[in-house]
Image (cartoon, rainbow, N blue to C red):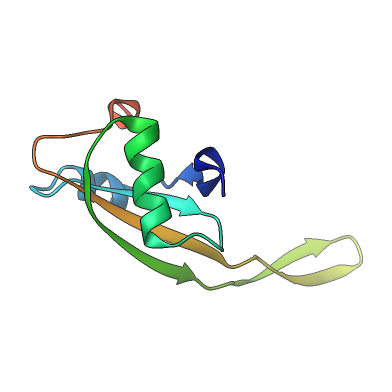
Length: 100
């Protein structure tokens, strides 16, 4: 698996912003469903030139979504996705996230 294709996008929410400001800096990424912890840590190391010390993975389950149309309501479902929380060594940070 290519290093560039492991990390799909960063997750930027109020909760993830608070995680970045803690003592142990953590970054959250949406990753490919086939990726494992070692591949994610290697991708973060190579793409951002930082040293990750831990990686926690979890699945975000799908949610139902209802939309209103002209003829009534229509139910659908958002897709499930895999989330990775990467902890960096103390004193390191990813500059792309600063100011977001």
